[in-house]
Image 1: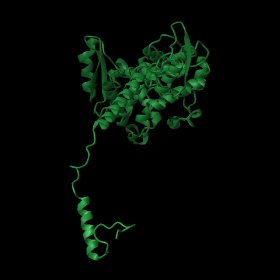
Image 2: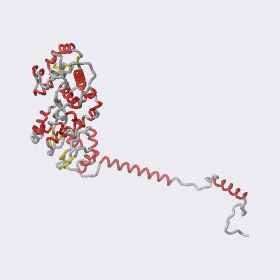
Image 3: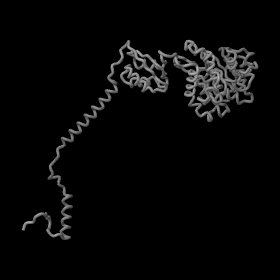
Image 4: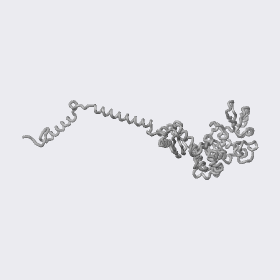
Length: 407
């Protein structure tokens, strides 16, 4: 009789032996190699998919490379057309580039940032409002921003080692008298007025800001008054000296018992008593430290008296009992005598470790100033004798050389 509704593989009776045989057969079937009887699959679809994927990747790379090269498809301003661009304080080169693209001066921000990198100008971009002409090259745009805004504002170039009085006249001249010399002197006469915002002024007390008006080229915009200019210079001092004064308690000047204000004071004297060579600055700083630490802690620098009298001092003036005479008074003068640059400030923080107590400057055969350093007064006098025919001059003048002072 035919069976219905139930498919039996090995036996219609469910016994243990039947179940075992059934399981064994199933296992053998599952592990049997059937590749010889299976139909072969064509590799063409997989090859096609691979080719399509490669084409897509190449197209994407070309697309983005093309965009990077040609930038956005904007119609640039033609020569004779102009655009106004405002750059704010702290703005990055990339965002400035975006603003130039929006003004249709360049095709892509990268044109600008690449030029900034090439010119190493990332820290020299001056904020302000500019009027640029169509057809300007990326280099011309970068250099214009480095020079400062032309439409609104004035360029104030502050040289190193300038005094506050000289700087006040420079500010008045740069602004066409809009900010007077008197207004600048008033705005910079009391450091305590700014100490809340500039902690590096804590040891300056109520002295003037002499020494802290950092030398650099600034853009003075029309909305700035004398105080704004002063604050701009103090901002720059903080930025420039962060690496050497940021941890002042652990600095070399602090280890010698100086406050930050006194370190700037000493740097101002180093600036006036040395050449532009950094090794010479460092060595002069080492000599002055040795004098301050000696049994006779007199700096004996003509430069401090020159600051007081406003010109080269006479022999009598450098020895007179006046506040800025470092022959008559031990230690540092009452205030810095100029605004030293970063090189002189660094020299005071990283002076040459030396036993020298004297220095003497003289011109060589090519007219370049050379320095002779000596440990003893006798060696110093010999250095003067050996080089006097060259017309040398020491740090404190011939009088100082004769008395073993700052030379």
